Every structure is written in C-alpha cells, then in structure tokens.
Length: 90
Image (cartoon, rainbow, N blue to C red; front, side, top):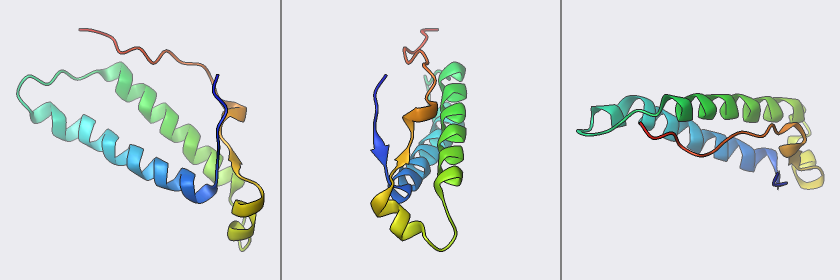
C-alpha cells in the first residue's frame, strides 16, 4: 500500500482530471478503429472516483476550507482498499 496526502484542492483537481479521462475512455475512444474496451478498468476507475469524492466530502468544512487545507491534508489512503491494477487482456 502507498500512503499519500493531498489537500482538498489537489484532490478535487485530480478527481476532475480522472473524470475527464474516464469520459474519454468510456465514450470517445471506443469510436476509434481497433480500440478494445476494458470494462473492468472502467469499473475500477468509477469505484476509485466515488471513493475520492467521498474523501473530499468528508474533509470539506463550510467556511474553513482554506485553513483546513493548509493544516490538515485529506487522508486518501486511510480508507484505501487493495485492488488489482493489472489490465486484463482480451
């Protein structure tokens, strides 16, 4: 397991980037000739994004977000679950 700490802002940016890439892999790339959809990878990505959004929601406090970001970074791995990141060949 790898332990990494992010601020809420950093985590929001990473979540946005990951959401954009998921959209590309799910809806744009399949239209390219020869592209093979890896549904298990898409499913893992959706689960990961849900976990990241949950961490963001838990660590966001109204009116004190900027202060909290500097003092207490969001702890992403405290709820991390191991998963197999090897892509399946089809």
